[in-house]
Length: 266
Image 1 (cartoon, rainbow, N blue to C red):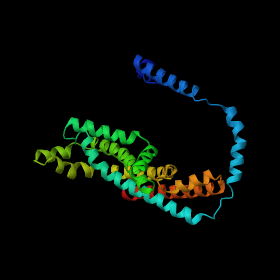
Image 2 (image 1 turned 135 degrees about the horizontal axis):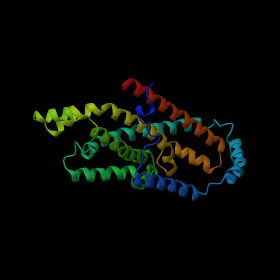
Image 3 (image 1 turned 135 degrees about the vertical axis):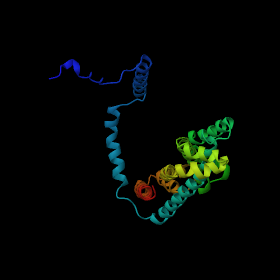
Image 4 (image 1 turned 90 degrees about the vertical axis):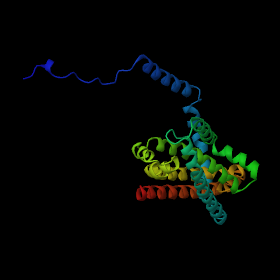
């Protein structure tokens, strides 16, 4: 029988961290505790508010069906806004991703400027973009499409660029050694390698745009949000529940369709 000393030492249960790593954990814990403390969390207020939630739900059911034709029309408009905004955003994302990726940007200054543009598109919420475009082009779905286009551009361009940076360097280097230019290298080596990731990102962006398009109507950017805001203003909670249920069905259908397409295509 082997002596105990001849066996290798047991691995540590937790990896050893440096002083800076441990300080980082402490800082993260302090940040979480500080945020929870200043968020005014109150179980008492929640329990006191439950009867009000029950009263609201009792006023929302059964859903009203009188305005279903109008709700169906604006719901279709919402879906069209999501499709158009996602398509335009994905198209704009491709050149921005090429110009902002480390291995495809023609110069570091162009990469820095392009990344700043992408970050600006992604940082500002789509509801703020909707307000800006409503002021610029007026009420209606056009402002909603522009808001979704900008938001989708910021979302997709970032992930497209990351996919390009993670692509295998072998094929592009082989093409460059044969004399291929930057455009040919991107078109024939990098884009085909990253196409599955781009398709998945585009489908996720479509799901995101479908959910976001619902609230854009609250600021006059078209879609079902207009009907929802009108019902809320008139305290017509039965129509509110009808709109919410219709939106739920649409979003669920879009998510299932997106999942099906990802399984079929990827």
